Each structure stands twice: as structure tokens, then as C-alpha cells.
Image 1 (cartoon, rainbow, N blue to C red):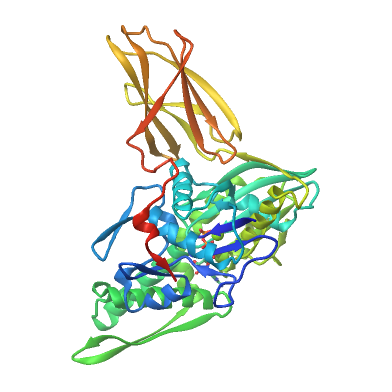
Image 2: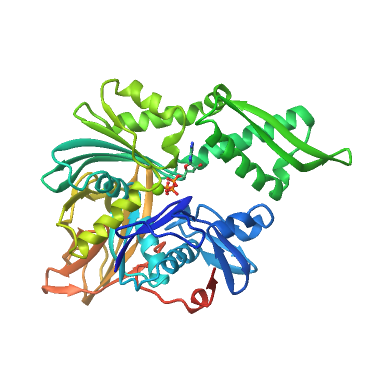
Length: 473
Ligand SMILES: Nc1ncnc2c1ncn2[C@@H]1O[C@H](COP(=O)(O)OP(=O)(O)OP(=O)(O)O)[C@@H](O)[C@H]1O
Ligand SMILES: [Mg+2]
């Protein structure tokens, strides 16, 4: 069986024709890992309950750290973010009682090449063969209506850690992405952070206690702040009550604060403005419908905000925002299994790809917004005498940030004088939106073997005994 996996910053789900149920009877498994000891990890709700007492051994939001070279130290051992994520993939695999041959895994449309490769690396460590990296908004659109005809929809996917905005046209079984935007650094947790700061500052001002210095207290604040944020999506105001969170004058201190929607709006003003700006960058007047995806789409002010931007557009609000992505991934898995009629996906590159020239300038080779699969060839030469290798520094331009994808080194069969070598470097985007680079020596007609160094992620399939020895519960 091919499964569809929605690996989320906060929650993960796995499906085929239905969403699989975990050992707790829940379709949603929190993306949380707890190291019980040196050979056992708890994943999901079991890990979540440990958050209060052992925050130093719990890892949250690991999806945000994929493809960035991030490491964690737990029980004196070093773990890469991809290794931690592999535990979540293994847990999901264990939920399914059947043999899994391969997986469709969803990723934010906005993910860069390193982040996509980070997901592949994590899946590979977990022994999953990924047949397709499916962009989350496309998965949501498939989940919304695999049989929909001729519509332009705007997908607003606002999850725990990412905000993906996608304008898409569905026509004759083709899901054609027209434009994407959003941010992989904006999600529900940012509102939690703001709320935690507000609580810390309020308690400091009111009672002179600094809750910031106590990791256990802070962990509790995060949990209660998230709950308060969720409460505010149904009520005007709510109490944040945490008994025994600190001591004051040798007596227990109980936190008791009330927060209302107005305070929430005022402390989150900056984030809300950012949300509006991001939506306006992608949206246009041709939209027929707007669909909301992701738990944070339940934020109380969001529908109002979207109504203000598009007063006369139809908002589809009867979809389950936490499940629609995995539903689409499961449907696409069934398409690949041949159980459902084929659909065609035309996705676009979110950020330009290119190389760094000798003067340190970015030379764009694949432009953001192009549909993939796609490829471009560029011809390079050598800049020094006696050169038998050429190193191409590959970058992805993400807003104003330059993401290093690694140095691609090609070796010639002989040494060339300055400017004599002619090498055609092909940048191609595969069906997963991943960059593949090949090169040909134009003087000899030979294809050249490439070696990647200085890369953030491992681009090869890997088997890690050290990680595989952990028992996943
Ligand atoms: N009623 C609510 N009001 C506001 N926020 C909510 C509500 N319910 C859930 N959330 C938030 O939704 C987020 C989780 O959403 P979801 O499960 O869709 O994220 P995810 O898929 O794990 O993340 P991502 O897609 O960004 O990787 C959390 O930040 C949670 O606090
Ligand atoms: Mg999600």
C-alpha cells in the first residue's frame, strides 16, 4: 500500500482511503518526540504529556528545523533534526497494520530545496520510500474536490509553523498552481510565543517574578498560552490559571490572568499585518472560492480579515482544516496505486535557483514561478590555468535570503588553460520540485561526475543503525 502522510509542525497524520487511527483512537498524532532513555523514544500524545516535566528531553516543532543543519543534544548524544523527524515517520508507519511500500509526503509549497531534502532524508532514515513530495495546498485542493471542475481557488493553509498561500486553477483533472506565497516561518506557534511573552511581562510587572528563567514554568506557559489562544476562537475572553508555577516570598505562587480578544489583537498586531500583506501578494480578483486549511485558520479574527480583503468571494468553511491535507495525500496515494483516475499536477518553483559567480553575485538559472518538471542549461568556463575541476556554488534565493544548497564539484578528464574548458551545467527540477544537477564537458562530449560538498542535507538514501536501534513507542 502507498500511504499519504501529512508531516506537520504540530500534528501529523497518515492516510490511504481513510485516515489511520493511532493507539489512542485519534487520527492526529502530535509531532512531538520524548527521549525516555538511550534506547527508547515516545512519540505523539505520550511525548506531549512529558512536556511539563522533562522539557529538556522533549523536541517540538522539528519540521521548522529541517534542512538547516540544526542539531540537538539529548542525553549527551547529538541528533540532527532529520533524525528526530525520522522517529515521527516511524511512529506513523507503526500506526498502520499493513505493509507500506511507499509514501506520498506533503510539504509546504514554500519549502526550499534544503527543507524538501530534509524531509526526504528523515523519511529515508525511517525506511520510507517517497514516491512524491506533494505540496500541502495542492493536497488540500485534491482533498477538497478531486472531481471539481473549472474553478480558481485560493488555498490559505495556516498551520502550526507555516503559512502557505496558493492560487490554483482546477480544470479537466489538472491541478494547476498559478502562484504561491506565504512564509515557512509564520504559524500558530508565533501567536503562542507572543502570548507567552505577554504573560511573562505581565507577571513581571504585577508581581516581580521572572518566569523566563525557569524552563519547566516556561513549558507550562506555552501549553496554557496555546489553550488560551484556542479558547479565544470561541469565547471573548478566557482565564489562564496555572497553580504552583513559582514561589514568592517562600510561598507558592499561582498564576491567574484574564485575556480577551482585544488584548490578543493588540499584541499580535504585527503578525496580523504580516498575514494580510502575504495574502495580498498572492491573491487576485479572479478567485472563485477560498478554502481554509490548517488549525490556525480557526484563529478568531482570520475569517473577518479575509472577508475584509475579499468582500464578495465565497469562503468554504465546512472542511476539517486539520484533516484536509492528509485526505488529499491519501487520495493521491490511491491515484498512484491506480485505484483512482489519474489527475495531473502542475506545480511551481517557489524560489529562484542559481549560482554564485566569482564576484559573489547571484546568477539566476531557474526562475521562481516556473512550472516543473523543467530544466535549463548554462555554460561555464574555468577562470584559472591548469584547472581540472570546477566548483559551482548553488543557491536558492528566498526573499532576501540566500540559501546555500551546496558546492557541486565537477572533474574534467584533463587540465585546461584559463577559459578553455566549456562545461554545460544542467539544472533540472524533478516531479518533487527538487533540483538535480548534471554536467557535460562540451570539449569532449563526456558527461562529468559530480560531487556535492558543503551541503546542509544528505541527498542520498541512508541507513542509520544508531537511530534504528531506538524503540519507538
Ligand atoms: N481553535 C483554534 N484557534 C486558533 N488556533 C488553533 C485552533 N485549533 C488549533 N489551532 C492551532 O493550529 C496549529 C496546528 O495546526 P495544524 O495541525 O494544521 O498544524 P500542522 O499541520 O502541524 O503545521 P504546519 O502545516 O504548519 O506544518 C497549532 O498552532 C494550534 O495551536
Ligand atoms: Mg499542516
